[in-house]
Image (cartoon, rainbow, N blue to C red; front, side, top):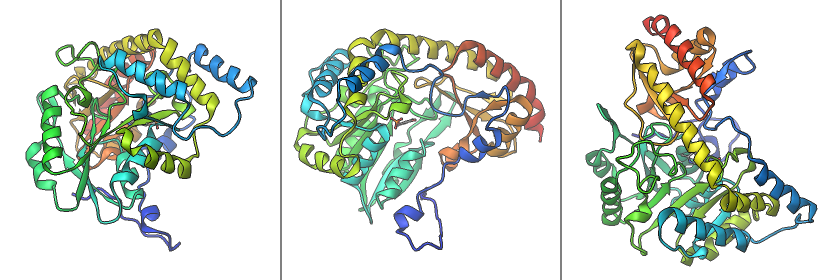
Length: 401
Ligand SMILES: Cc1ncc(COP(=O)(O)O)c(C=O)c1O
């Protein structure tokens, strides 16, 4: 299945630009924008502002005059702090030369895609998937090939037969987002081993998006409180690019700060690509990131605890009998399967009008997402309780048609 959007335009632009897909959430968002009392659970971010110790570090940097161009790869202090952070969380030393600071997870992904794919190439994406994977692949000129996951009693699972069948001589990479946006699917160590084996066999790069790796709700899956990672199973020579960000763990979505982790041998190439992308991430933003890594563990623990509470609250959405929601194992999204003949977009619009709750239509996450709604539960309990109450009240009416 080709999930690239077909587009035609009178502007005679490059197809990579013309075919960049529009966000499937925006229509619904526009419908509910500025509604009084609406509980917004459609966007992938929490409701907490960035903690002040992070803001203060950035302010101090600006006041000290750190307003000049900087290292393309990121300031050495931040790359070293990332190395210590990874050792602390994943239990193994990591060379600071593996880290490249970017202006968010999204630019890290764009650089990764540009390195491994271009016109004539294909990249596999298990779907439903965060739409920006398709966007980044399309903008790189390559073709995004969606490979549906299977939905069953225990939630979503990879379908290795389908993955195998989707490989062609043009396949260059596979994206693996675990824990996943939007499904909450979290790879087991055995999934990761099989994916690695699959990638090695077909000589593919793995684009590993593990940005929600600290948010795992299934104790049977967790390793020292975090999700299984490719770094638990990989060998140094494996071709893996890790996408990462400060956005979620430290409530820094608006800062635009992330990192790409890659084999150090790619250092000069990545440095060049950063030069032609942003020419480096502002130093004061990086100082905020440094404070987040060095003093932010308590805040991350607070965020994780909040997400667990939210996860338990949204479980009550199954009470109407109209929603299937196998407990998502990770991230902070619930992907609700609604028993209704209506499209996910129509249901989302009616939920705005009749429940004053904003959810994202599953169709925004590829064809496999049709029939589902995504809800972000990184939010205070009182909002979530009220949202669940309103949805449970309105859904029986809406689902009927
Ligand atoms: C799966 C996934 N990867 C990457 C990102 C990128 O995050 P950012 O560009 O805000 O750092 C997001 C944001 O929602 C995401 O959901």
